[in-house]
Length: 303
Image (cartoon, rainbow, N blue to C red; front, side):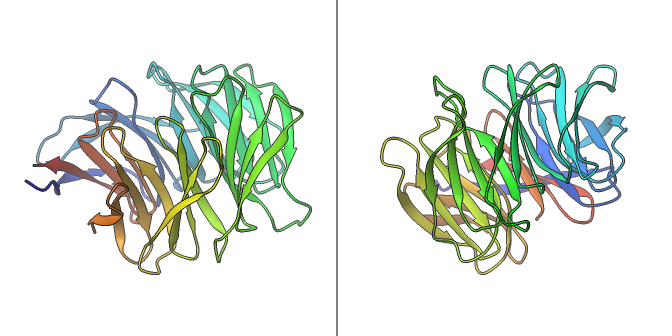
């Protein structure tokens, strides 16, 4: 029997666009979201029909829009990046900022933990990618291009690599792979998009990444060996704002401006199901999608 997505409910608490959603590993009863209302919400999920959860704690301190948020693997800490040029590390049990990362000169567009959570990567509209330790100390800076308008919109670690490797998406329409251990060496550049890129996401096993942005086309790129284009998907012309791979299925999900949420079956290269942010629960059973009205809608996979 085919699998479908059923709308289970909503999460209401933000007063402006939901910019990112983070789901912890091994805990299906909470998520964390960031917003242009300058706050981060920690949600307790009661999973009731209609009202799927309630805000447990609101994290405040950023002085501008919060653009991205991720959760540590133990679910005890969150990391955020903001238009105020700062990163913040939060204790989710107390709601207190435990560390502030200062160094970017423009909007922090994305943040991410390494698999072992010993390193942090951030991207910015100041055209840089920075590698940090958890003490808030910048270990190295990569400058992507010479143009003042070529800011870096997204950066993520590639898992299962012996040396720290990062993939980035930029306004110059390219995806780049960086080896941070070898003098910040540029390993590969992927080109083919017809517009600036908003996002890049890496598969759970680190074998591929997907990129998307203004041209409404998703490109899938191989990260093992050949560094080549694998295939592409059309998002019906809508700008792509966010993407994520399902942790348990061969699915790629995209939040688009015109057509809402798209889900493609990567193996069969077809749309499985027809927003500003989204993420899967760690068990792959629930999709959380954030919208510009500040509401998070919750979708459950049904057989």
